[in-house]
Length: 387
Ligand SMILES: Nc1ncnc2c1ncn2[C@@H]1O[C@H](COP(=O)(O)OS(=O)(=O)O)[C@@H](OP(=O)(O)O)[C@H]1O
Ligand SMILES: [Mg+2]
Ligand SMILES: [Mg+2]
Ligand SMILES: [Mg+2]
Image 1 (cartoon, protein in one colour):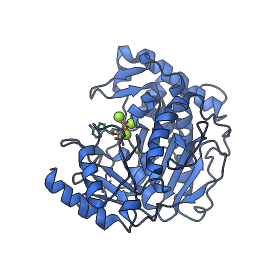
Image 2 (cartoon, rainbow, N blue to C red):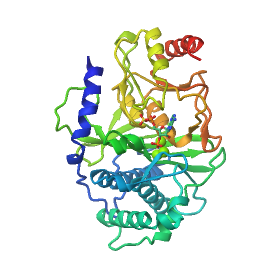
Image 3 (cartoon, helix red, strand yellow):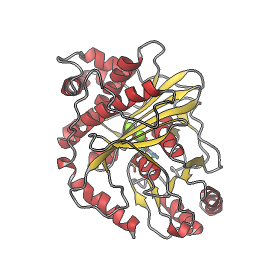
């Protein structure tokens, strides 16, 4: 079964990550975006998209470098005890810097996961200096500047530009500098996830997935398979996938058109603490899905689904957990523009206009238009048993 092979390969993939992709593209001041998007040429948000793609690629490059030499001392706990790495902070600082450089600072607003509080403490200084080095090296390596330009104070400011509350008015960038922190630390899947909200609607999304196989997670590939995908979407402009290292040109991708559950496979969180896997198993059973789930960390799941690797996505956090907008905004538009449907368990579209949190009924679902009604009916039936 393709889905079984996919699970096996994703586990196996971790072993090969350290020798994986090295970016070959050199982004200069004039072609900073690295984006060649034919389908988007006439759409609005074209400039924002180019800047966002460039920012996400730059951050992904830093993440790849850090993942290679990840050491225990590079982790630091924060109030919620989730793992935070220098790459989280470095990625956020870089995206913030690149967006402000490309878009301008006037009315700039960003809702991002991390803040610099821990780095401003005395015992955060070592880490701050390391992050400052990493960020400057990433900028110099890309040919964007020839000498270090960010001081440690600049880095703190760049990270803290992500403190916006978002909301229904104006434009807000939405950033998860590393989505799937646990996957990143494990050497598995993670994503740099960047979206743009305009008057409360997600209008643009970029997912850089450095460890996602280019050939798809449901195809037989060799152990040396190329990895590193970048998905991008703008409202009305479709979803494109390109390689992070420019080894192939962007192509438009679409969700699977499988219309029978028996032929469908679903994807969900790798971490059972992040989604109720007993409930999702039950929903799949009621629906008639026979294949075991593909478990992938992070919004790489949304990218995989957008190109048809899986037909259904389900996420049911444990009771009491509140979703954040940066965990879904980019992924949501990437699936919708690939022809998919994203809903909560009550069948409502996700509303990203309420601030930093995303309030959903029970959980988040995605599939193609042919299967959404069956999926919602199956969810309703399963929730009657497993509240
Ligand atoms: N308890 C709990 N329940 C639900 N969700 C949680 C929980 N804790 C964390 N998170 C968020 O999950 C993000 C990781 O996304 P996934 O669950 O899709 O990936 S994974 O399989 O868990 O790696 C993860 O994103 P990052 O923090 O960016 O890694 C968190 O925002
Ligand atoms: Mg986190
Ligand atoms: Mg996240
Ligand atoms: Mg994160």
